[in-house]
Image (tube, rainbow, N blue to C red):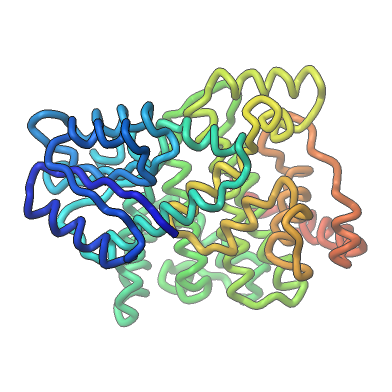
Length: 402
């Protein structure tokens, strides 16, 4: 697909390299470099780009200032900030950027972040959702603790030991990992007390999901709003994840799918945080509407913002490069029957798990949406709901708050 990309960096050699790498990735991309931010802005006014990649430290204008102006001139453009002088944890505080890239970076890293950004944007077809996405000023970056974990996993020989150490050094994470390792969902039958044994029992994919979700929730701990109870949302996500994994296994889906369902369950409410962080007034209005009309919050959010939290969350998770099947399941959560299906999939499992968990561990005080019974019948699993609800009730002694 034809794309227009503007690269802005006052160091000519760095600029030439970035432009060359991007041109090599896709021959159809029109990549133009600028050493002067003002010239870049003039180009944005003349022709809105698909993506702007800017250095942060420039003498005439900070990259964050440039991208904020780009946001106003070309709101649909993907905005990426990069720097070799500003640490990544400081870059992530720049709210005018969608993505962050620390120098020096490899061609592969640049390729990955640009392609993921385009993939996330291409997923959006609905005009209302696009308006919400382009209006976001604050989007969390992939947590550094998860990036560290991914690096550890690259070395299969030492990954287990390194991960076990990471878990042992974090009391909250250790408790969560040991809790899950002793869950009947894994059926080991033996009490697991050592983090290393828990890593072996759970596998690195499950552990990675837990590490990532813990990091996301900690990121929003300072976001104190009367409309959101963080602990309540976390409990709901944890229970949804466990049940989604069980439903996948019980329905005979492959083990990898069950692990991806667990990840999707843990992160399926991230859109709620993003919306309340970026649109606090509209979020409050949606809560007020739900109280007045006794409807589910997701319904009111779709009415007020023209976009649901699951769709917004899926967009960010796509930016992070999470598995596409998990992202797709979250994106389809509000309306799983709309996109069509080849049968019972991870989308169905997540929908069922979220609905059952919402009954016993709701993320908020608003009503739960009615079951989409026709969809369940079409999936051939309507008669299994009672069985999964019973399983969930038997396992509810091991809630996330234990």
